[in-house]
Picture 1 (cartoon, one colour):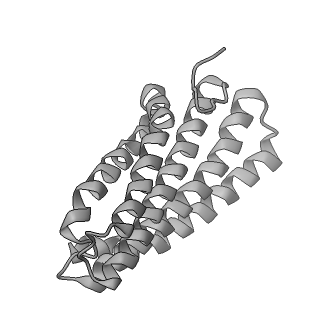
Picture 2 (tube, helix red, strand yellow):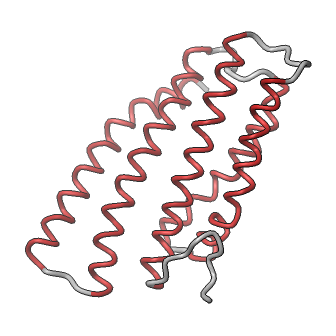
Length: 178
């Protein structure tokens, strides 16, 4: 969808500006209000989330640029599309951040290994003797796979921040308390 791709590309500038605004507001709050405990946790985590989302916007822009470059064709060959659909399904859960849903956040943290395994499959596909795509599609499979894996890593980082904001507990790969 070339229109959706262009929207993502154009929206990256807005995300960059939002990040700068959020960080500036957080610094002002820290300087003027001297927040403690829960408030400090929220302000510092918000700064980190703003940076994480800005980087996610950059990665989404890279994927959108590949889609726009190859339009009307897909940057991915048909045999790669189911694998990338699975990767996309993982990334769709990031909406939990809007309502501080810690159960979804914890599931994203746990599912990170699944996305890493899917990313490994992109290399297996690209190195397969059965590869039938073009050289450009080979490059796109590897790069878009990497971008999506990094989006997942940032989603996990954001999920950890959400758990921390809500509970004060800093989860690792196993997001349950000892």
